[in-house]
Length: 104
Image (cartoon, rainbow, N blue to C red; front, side, top):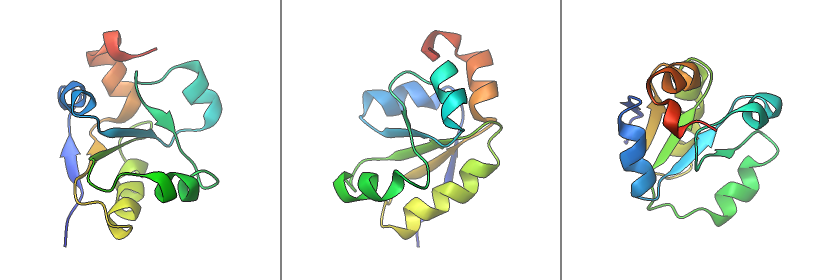
């Protein structure tokens, strides 16, 4: 069975270039205030429409505040059949400290 992989902030740009889904599971207000360029917000209400339309061959990178909740959420995408699933190490907070040019 596929396992969740850890990706650091330097790997996000490569994944964006490859067309990966960058999924932000923080609350919508936090997402609207600032997020990773090219990411999309996802929550319990939007996960089923996302899964219905998703290209299962693309990688998924899950982002939360600090990299803890994203590990659990990433497991869901593995259970749904994605093979390449990442959790962002350090979460959004660390990402924007190290890659501010990719934060909106």
